Amino acid sequence: MAEAKSLQKKEADSLEKTERTRSGKVFTPATDIIETGSAIIVLADMPGVDEKSIDITLEDNQLTIQSNVEFEKPKDYHLLYSEYDVGDYYRSFSLSDAIDRDKIEATYKNGLLRLTLPKAEKAKARQIAVKAE
Amino acid sequence: MYWTGFFNDFEPWEEMTRLQEEVNRLFDDYGLGRRRTFPEVNIWTNEDSALITAEMPGLDSKDINLSIQEQSLILEGERKPHELKEGERFHRRERGFGEFKRVIQLPFPVNADKIEAHFKNGVLSVTLPRAEED
Image: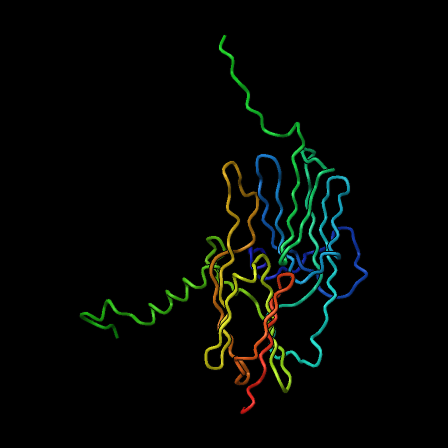
């Protein structure tokens, strides 16, 4: 089951070379990666975070998404039944040189993070005409 | 015991199962055949009301339908897939999509006129006040 792609939130396996200084669970957001003619689009399910807490960093070839979730227990309620847990999100991706790093864009709406990683000019597919001799 | 004659074509439970599978298409795991629950819910209560929360990232509030049937909250809708345009392709596809329906049994009768629902950052919160006569 651990390897199954799932709609259920998946706990992060390990945080590479990083020790967490916060308590609580960390989840790996379910992600779609789509290549278009001009960009790589990354869609990541990150419900319940504040857009200001989403931290996107690019170091060497590693693009990292993380978000610390400040969960507030509903006031004056007690939990009767639970199917999901709330926690931070963490995921990293390795990028190729073919991405134009200065033009990466991120938007967050309805719990979905959307990253647009534009391809560098030299990496865009080009039509090459075959000349007849 | 097998049914005979005309009844061979009528298997009500099978039909129910099939309908359930239709509804639960979202839970399919791209060919792995596993069923998934979507959305996952948490239920909170106190003396006066119940609070149901559900994580539904990537949906719009208009894609979510809520209704009350007897003592259950019905939560249904559709998470639409990313439509590929020409020349686009998936490198990785983990986010499920499709229609979903959940019937959530409530711990007590509720006042259907006073239900409040909010959808923020992909999290649905539904507050259901307990019926006064209860």
